[in-house]
Amino acid sequence: MTQVIASYCDCQINGHETQVPTETTNSKLDSQQEIIDSLESRWLQLIEKDEFKLDRMRDAESTADRLEGLLHKQWNPCAKRGYFRCFNSGECIHPLLGCDKITDCLDGSDEEPSICDESYRPGRGSCTVVLPVYQTCFPLAASEVIIRRVITKITRSSFLPQFFEGSAIDDYTFKDSMGRNVKGSIPVKFNYHFATMVSNWYMTNKQYRLRAMANFTFSRGVAYGQIYKGSRLDEVCSDHAIWKCGA
Image 1 (cartoon, rainbow, N blue to C red):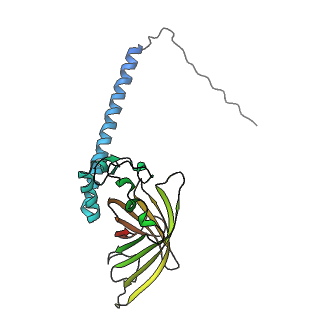
Image 2: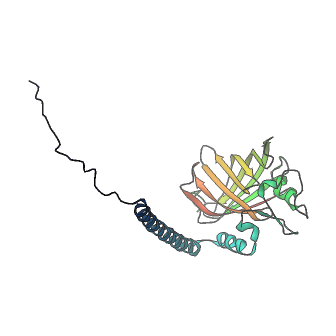
Image 3: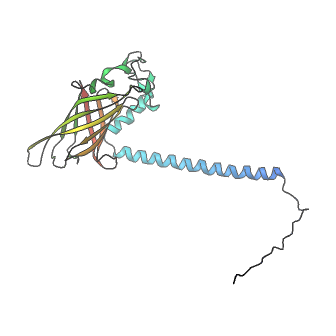
């Protein structure tokens, strides 16, 4: 049996009730908006303070390359804006204007081969990478790990000349805990973008699977970076690696 429940509302509408003036409503809304804006401003200030504290903590724990980066940004006005600083003439240019076959710096340094592609030319370009003793990328190493990287191939983008990718061979050497020399090779895939001056390297063989990120911002042919286990950036195995590249 279906039951039907009836309900009713004994409501009355008073058509003579006084309405709130529009000016009063707008004034209340403006006051509420001021409160919201004030709370948002305080929230942003707290975030800035927390970020400042975190930055100071990171700086306290950073290595020499991170400190170099901070000093670089202090004296180099281009770095504060994310621009490239012409080496000798000193003007700032947008990074997308570098290594595009058109000279924008008065001294021509934005097209200088040492920062564009000379270090990456097959048969000529090579890099030496040094990993510190405390690294864990090569678990058997009881010494510094020296990697000699030789470029074998590069491929350029026809639409973005500042970007290219390629392949290389890494020949590594180190001493194990018994003092024996250990050598080996790892095939590498990499890419480089002048606009960021960051190079990514993917080193993979049956024994190792590593990813490296190097930043070539501060000096010609020299970079500092980190190496990670796997292809993701969630497990650092060397937080301080030095690249020296040149023909």
